Length: 166
Image (tube, rainbow, N blue to C red; front, side, top):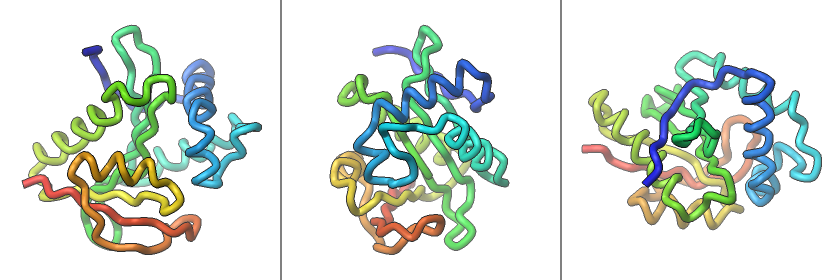
């Protein structure tokens, strides 16, 4: 199985182009999220949104790279949610051509291991209600629904999921 590394996003022009290609490879996600038109992805807006995310206290935007240093995924993490204090996965996105090759599963596992090492007792995320494939993915990894509510940023209906780490 190929080696994966996680590195903070640096926003070089080449890296930004690879990240936009990553989003472009996932038009279903773009349509479900409603943030970007998958037919006309605005590189400058994607970069600005990720810069804002990376610049928010307690947030990280990490790129998953393969053994040839190609970007194969994107991971946005929040160390402590302002309401519940748990760490959250804000986004896990894998290049579509690599779906079903266990990369998403490995990225989720790396995240869980990280928070487990930090002594955290659980991690959370929100799945858009209109994204049943994402719900099936997270459920298959042992995550369980704990709530339904709108997301804080866009007011989209979401399923809040939790995975205990103990």
